[in-house]
Length: 421
Ligand SMILES: NC(=O)C1=CN([C@@H]2O[C@H](COP(=O)(O)OP(=O)(O)OC[C@H]3O[C@@H](n4cnc5c(N)ncnc54)[C@H](OP(=O)(O)O)[C@@H]3O)[C@@H](O)[C@H]2O)C=CC1
Ligand SMILES: O=C(O)CCC(=O)C(=O)O
Image (tube, rainbow, N blue to C red):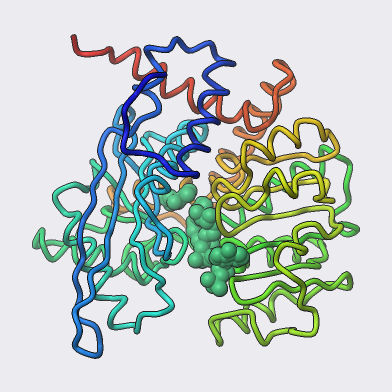
């Protein structure tokens, strides 16, 4: 696929390699590949803010809209120090395959600001969030591009985004972002949706493998929204959580942790450090401790060519986006003992409930939590069944099966709509 592009870097290269593997499986001709892989639009904005000490600081923000073939674009906004346009583009591409696999009427998008939100005061975080949304107003809209939370952002940031957009429209536009607090047009069930979905599909994989949750152990990397909810939900299902971590510390104890208490500790202190420091282990070693279920729930590229042969889990549940590199995938392909639940399937609960939130906001008709959960699990089960059937029929990995379904749906829509001559 010969194509000059500004999108590059290790994370975008990963998305490209995954796409190429699947395009080969699907026998997609070369001339269709660039149109499918490369993003439709990308915005880079400069966000100056006045810091608490009176100095002006300038942050760079990004938003990439991968394709608009099936409806508006959809995806989270990430606040993290190493965010760049290549990473955001890769995350937008993955959102497209994820939404298509779940059957949602969206293309993928992702955005971010290169900033460590923990180094900002609440006031600074608010004005940066508002400035970012203000800069994005010409490019987003309830039927153009709908933002949501991701790494480093939360319900409060979504409320500021929604408020900023609404002030510019002169009316309240709740449907401009999802993942908002319930008090401002959010849906019941969104806060826990990603972690709930992760735990639900781990349950499906355990059932398929004849595993009893009450005798299973899990290690979870990342203890934010997705990691902590995955941990507490698995814990309630009887799984013993033997490893947890965040950026400040990694903890391992074969006897298990009280993860409800850990979540309370993080809610109070902001970090895991100080919760059970006697159980500290190096972050790299945490991933290779024996466990039944390994859940990377933080950042990309943590299961690599170096450690893929060393992990000792039976289920690798990819709660994070892009945690496993193509080199690791090649090693895992030789390890039928590890059941991989690929990211675009495993963490789709978040965007599925975001879709429900958008629909409820557009209709101003709100559902109860049971309705949200029932529809969430229905869509996740359908995706899981589809992926398992295709993987078995074609003798391919769960990742290639999941990507195949997503890519093929986007391709069909593009080809049916046609290419303007
Ligand atoms: N939020 C959502 O609905 C969805 C999120 N995802 C994906 O899930 C992952 C986590 O997102 P989310 O939970 O929302 O983010 P949060 O910001 O809520 O939490 C991130 C967690 O990961 C930790 N972390 C960050 N970097 C590292 C690292 N290098 N090693 C270990 N831990 C680290 C953070 O630690 P610390 O607090 O110390 O910084 C924090 O505990 C991301 O990949 C995201 O794209 C996928 C689908 C939906
Ligand atoms: O809820 C959403 O719209 C998107 C969540 C997200 O960013 C993701 O699935 O990676």
